[in-house]
Image (tube, rainbow, N blue to C red; front, side):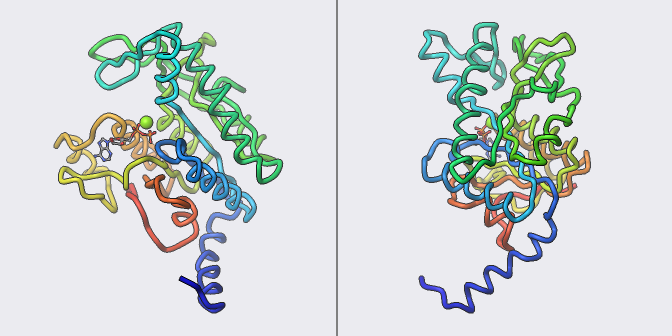
Length: 283
Ligand code: ADP
Ligand code: MG
């Protein structure tokens, strides 16, 4: 397909209302799923984030890395364990979690973005006591060093945002300073809320939230979400995404989307065009 000049101009102009809406505003992107594994998708993600920054938005990236953590635990001779679908983090696991999230994944993302310039800086929820957590309890057993977000001290992120794209690894500290593993979806929502973000986007490896028949739900409100959960259609990885998406909406984030990160430039299309892809979560 070749576009003539008029068509190219039309497409560029389609972005104008979105550039205006988000100018100077914060957009939090939870980076996960396929977009994190595939080299072409990783590059397309990085360039989308860079474009957002250069047109005047304040993108903030939050990431986890469950798959890489499991792989590294196995490589070191351990066995990843789960209770009721939730990862258990033992004291030994915690060292691996920190190594993989902060030392490998976070720096990989920073380097990827910085191929475009001096743009990104990495940190974890430990830095500046960004993410303060309490011990997470689960009725089916102890999860070890897993936290749920109690409070966000966004100072370090707002400072960084003046000059950089912050890239945040999903760890937190309790009030005693003990580090905990935290679900990255929850961190993304809490960070978006504390920054007064204009938008929160979850990049994942499905077309959006799927209903019981496997069809993508275009828009989902709190009532419908409760029904969907009760029907059993929401499984493991989508549970924290859906509940933190609803928390973010309740906490004042006006736009929350769950997006298919397997599509090249999914983020670009979502932010700059009228093409709605994925599931929009509404109040
Ligand atoms: P991420 O890295 O994006 O956090 P997860 O594996 O944690 O990825 O979460 C996404 C996964 O949630 C999907 O791959 C899918 O298997 C699962 N899932 C469970 N229920 C649903 C649902 N109703 N709609 C979409 N995905 C779902
Ligand atoms: Mg997940």
